[in-house]
Amino acid sequence: MSNSIAPASARRVSLDAVLAFAWDVGVFTASEAMTAVGLTRSTTIDVLDELVTLGLLRELPNAREGGEYRKGRPARRFELKGDAAIVVGTDAGRAHITTVVADLRGNELAREHVTLDPEHDSEDERRAFAMAAVDGALDAAGRTRQDVLAICVGVPAPVDRDGNSPPHRAGFWRRMNPGFAELFGAWAPIVRVENDASLAAVAEGSVGAAIGCRDYVTLLAGERLGAGVVVDGSLLRGAHGGVGEMVAFDHVVGVEGAWGLGYRAAQWAREAVAAGEVSPESPLSRVDASELDGRTVLLAARGGDPDAQRIVDRVSGMLGIVAGMFGSLFDPRRVVVSGAISDGAAEVVAAARVSLPGELDLPAPELVASELGGDVVCIGAVAAALEVAREGVLDLAPGLRKPA
View 1 (spheres, rainbow, N blue to C red):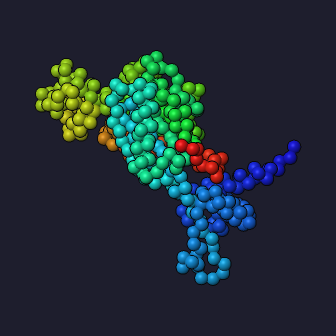
View 2 (cartoon, one colour):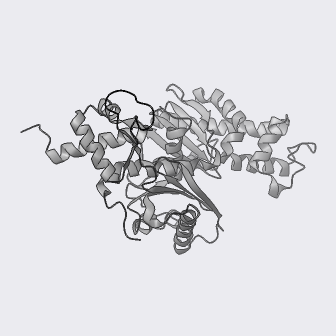
View 3 (cartoon, rainbow, N blue to C red):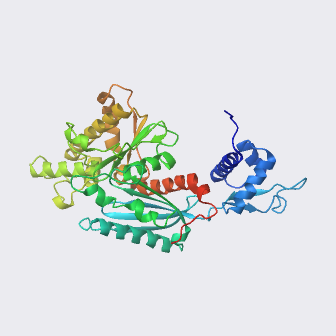
């Protein structure tokens, strides 16, 4: 059997290599591309010209015209045509939808945030809200559906490789993901639907606390805990998208559920106040129970309140158990506590870091707090949309878009 590559296949490999190089650098010359991808000069020039024709690269004035070159043949200069198309990243939570429109460089063009009524979460309502949110963000960016190359939607449900969520005993997962892959696929060329915690993992690996790490777990610590798992550089999903599903923690002593750090801090603080276990002088006693949230507990502990500190210690113990379980199951090098609570949970993470080695026999993973805040899922959605855009754009060129 011959090991030679068919001409069409070899051409595609060359196009992929040069486009990938262009996507990762700024302005570059043909010589720099040739050196980076290992092609001959003539092949490199041909590929660059083809990418320009396809509308993916832009040729810039040569070095002589730019006043940077004085002798010999002037170098041809190119750059990725970042405005050739756009990508959309959407965090479709239960109580909110945040949508970001970005160019092919990942530069944000517009952002829209919509607050939802969690009681109105039927499949039809969710589809309508999500589509309106995306169209609103596109309008704010001065772009249309015709300009979209790829869209990624994050949902609070397991998601399989096809973008679908499995049945749930209460129907929740399919209400959260009511066929988004099909809905947006009706007009967007490339659609990716992911679990929100998985997108948090994409964000941390792209621009956050897990850059350069090939084995890590991201704990999305919102009202409930979720986990995105990366092993050997690959995001894990499982047959039904259930890798990282947290229901097993219902049966773990010291955790008893998948409730988030802030939720647990507030719950345990309210229970302690109601049981008379909190001093009347504590800040926790001076807040109405309906307004007592996790941030209040963390701030009180930071201010030296012993009752709040006792609750924070309990939350830290819970986090140590959860991180230890994932450490035993997936052997990560790092566990990242992510989400809106992460920027105020330094003390919780620090205390859990101390207890973590006792929770597993393997070397304990490094436990760190994210710095990406509440935008982490949306950041991951944009990064994931760019990832699939890079993988699929040459399959769509030159007709990059579907009719609206």
